[in-house]
Amino acid sequence: MKKSKGFSYIEVILALALFAIAMLAIIPTLSQAGRNIVFAEDVYASHLQAQRIMLTVRDALIIGADPEQAVSQHIADGFEFSVWVFGQIAQEFHTLDVPAADASVVGINMDMANRASTIVVVVWGDDEQVAGRAIGMAY
Image (cartoon, rainbow, N blue to C red; front, top):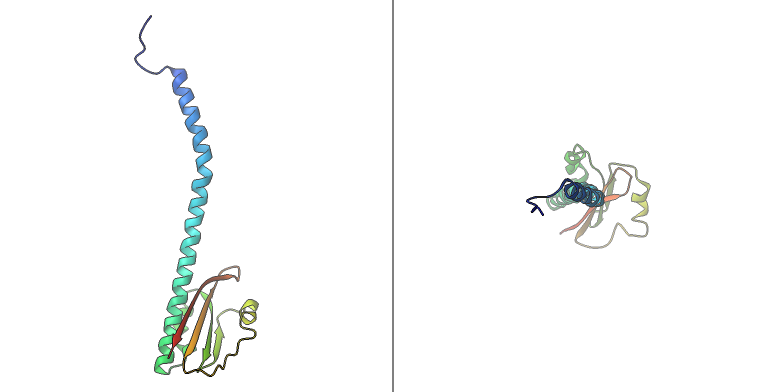
């Protein structure tokens, strides 16, 4: 009997076949992970943009400027957004006519007697669904 010093062709082919079957099971998982990463990046960018807009509106309210004028620079960023200011200064403006925008504040009194102003910013996605949001206060 001769001693074997390596793998036979049959063993190599079987090992490669098992590896290919295992990879077929892993590929859909990797593909879904890639889609999830893209979605997470979009959500993060939307929330970050909402935060920027909210801070711009807050700063405008603090110095007594028109918040709608202050956010005009953000319109060029390509995001569609809605802003509501409740409290001391009641104001509402949108860059997109989204029916859900007006429905989302039904029943809320925009002219609440309060020294502070609450700022709500919603960034809308391509499908007119909420993509990002931020809430802040200006005293």
